[in-house]
Image 1 (tube, rainbow, N blue to C red):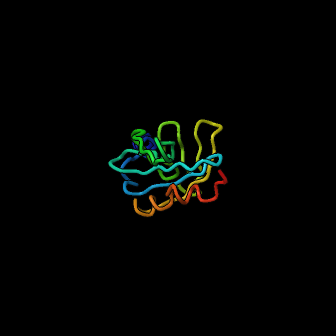
Image 2: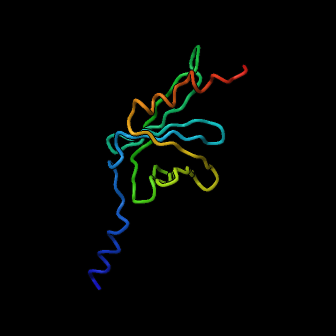
Image 3: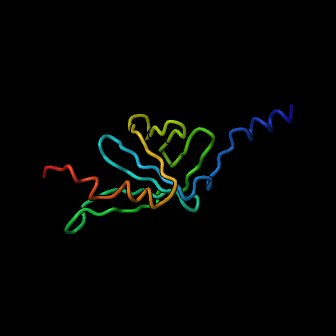
Amino acid sequence: MRILFILLLTAKTVYSGEIDGKGVVCLIYGNTIGYFFEDSRAFEYTVSGGDKKLELTKKDIGKYYTNENYIYINEIKIDRKNLKFQKYSSFRGQCEAFKNFELFKKRINIDTLIQNNKI
């Protein structure tokens, strides 16, 4: 019985650091938000207004955890198999995975994101 309890306790162990050096870019209700993982922490990349033009901002949003099915960042849950994004129960989106920062940065390029803007 004791062995069964230990197995159940460790079966859903949550890890961090496993996806360091990788990232996801998510489309959430038309907005593009990137999450890059390094040093067991998640960094959120968003496009925001600067003094004269749009800028890419980086924000440390805390430690992330993973298991075989999900990536957890505070209230955010990203399905590792289908890359569906969920924050709280209502914010939902779809993500795309990137194996390194160079590919991640190309996908979240401001010029590419605004090329079809009319104004």
